[in-house]
Amino acid sequence: MIKPSEIFLLLLLSFILVPYGSVSANQSFQFEISAGQVKQTGARCFRNTCTSQVAKLFGTFAAEISDDSVEFSNAYISTSPDLSFRLPTDPNESNNGVSRRFDFSFDGEQLKVSGTIDSRAFDGPLEEYEFIAEVIKVGSNDEFDQHGFFTARHDFRRCAAPWCGGYFVREVNKRSTRCADGEMREECYVASINLKVFNQAVSTIHSQTSILLQGEIQTKDADSLGMSVKPLGIFKAKAGYLSATKQKARGIFIGLEDNGIRCITTPCFSTDQYVLNRDTVRSISNINLEKVGATQKQLESAYSIIAKDGALLASGFNKKTEEFAGTGTTFIANQFYLPIALVDEACSDGYDFLDGECKTPIGCVYPKLELWIYGGVRQFDLTTGEETANITKSCVDSCVSSSIRGSDGPGRCSIYLP
Image (cartoon, rainbow, N blue to C red; front, side, top):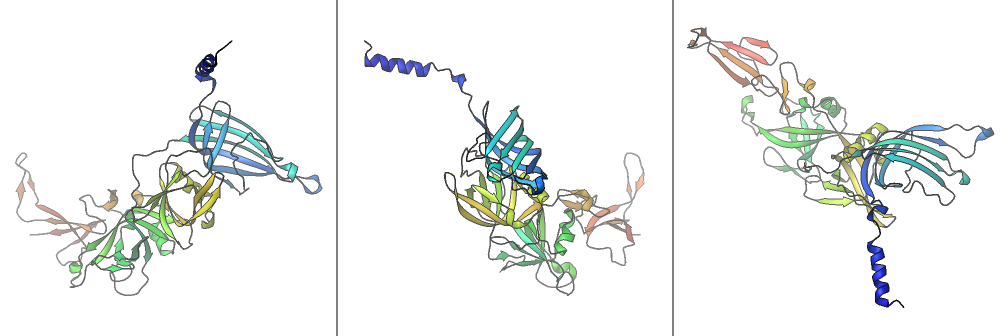
């Protein structure tokens, strides 16, 4: 007769001796769809004629993958045209009269998928989908800088420049902004913004499309104008972002960034939300960009920014939502902003794009000009004995002077002394 202690020992040994390799551990990955489509066919057709709709499929999602199964989560999927397609959590599970079929292959870098969702038993559509998705490496060494963000609008007042015709800027998520003269105001007037380094920025800001800038207000001494007045403000921008639509931004301004968390159920707090111009960071479980009214291409760009270790800038509100396994937080956006590309072509003739600014060869920042002064004491090269002119170089606001000959070319003027 086997003693109870021996039964316990046998059970323990049977547990220990189960080979670990018999069950493949699941692995979680973040993906972006590089190519895909959905074909949708209705259940009932007039006069037995069915016309299927085919749409491009794009977006990002998380997937937990084992040797023989895939489960999807955190899917931000769109189609163009919109077919209201949703990626199922378990693509092989058939229930409630809906039949699903799913095949996949995964090599560690690329996921290839084909599947069907058949809801025709309840007058729903037959959806046939296929796509190729690439693994996104999450986790960046660069921290998102959530400070120094301003909105900008053009000044349409009519008076002598530079006192009018510049821009009004204000810090987002703050009631007042410190201006160049040290005073706190709802918004600050600046005579100029270095928008020369931003492609399309000047034309878009004049057409009332909203621009979000990251940078700072700097002081420009007005003494060069021959007036004893308070200093003028100029805005030094290091990054610019253009709104997706002309819709007015409301609510809080935030940055949305993937934090690398992966889940097999919802809510999954996989997105970090940075409140701009504050030190507040919170995690949210979902993002809704539908109310912005953006194009499919803009939505694709927005989700791609979040997926590829970037931060999508947006405005809107947080809302508590009931999800499968509890209460989550969804950010509902009414506007989002896409980066304005820095391009060399934005600089005028005579200037090159260097360190985020348009500069002349000797380093004069646009719109300043190079001033070359020739003359004075003659100099000799001690090696060759060659006589050379004495040349002094500096940066000036303009070439208007009785002693200045005029422009020697783009961004340059000269003086010749006796």
